[in-house]
Image 1 (cartoon, rainbow, N blue to C red):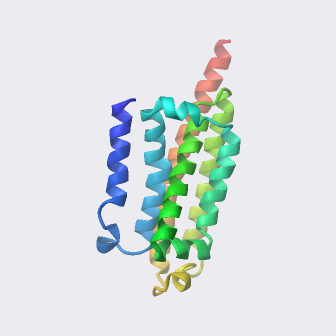
Image 2: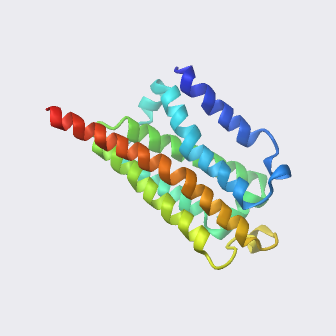
Length: 190
């Protein structure tokens, strides 16, 4: 166990789950902040903080990147998103699958026997996060208000998409590029 990584992960999880964030910051942006905190911040810290557990979860990085892609995009379909925003069970299922997918991606990519495959998994994740964030920002209307039973809030959706772009894209991109540089540096030494 590495407390230097594990403690910040636990603080982040407590910060997004314990207080009633929606009471102070209602709407789509806080929902997206939770998503991004789970997959791009808390998950890699958990993986780094629990190396023994992470080693057992280190599956093929490209396979887990595709799995994470499916999880993230599925929960952003209007009906699934509405379920997560309007029911406790939907919210719990969404949060659990986001965290599990995030941990699997980071465990697989950071522990990859082929570092370029790990880098590829992180870069693939950065690309799909960028695409989804851009779609949320550029959509001509609020995609979720009808299924959530709320007033249309295109500005809130755009702010959520910007959070995805501002957090997810650079975290995965920088990690993927760092792994690529490390792998290429090792190959140059061989």
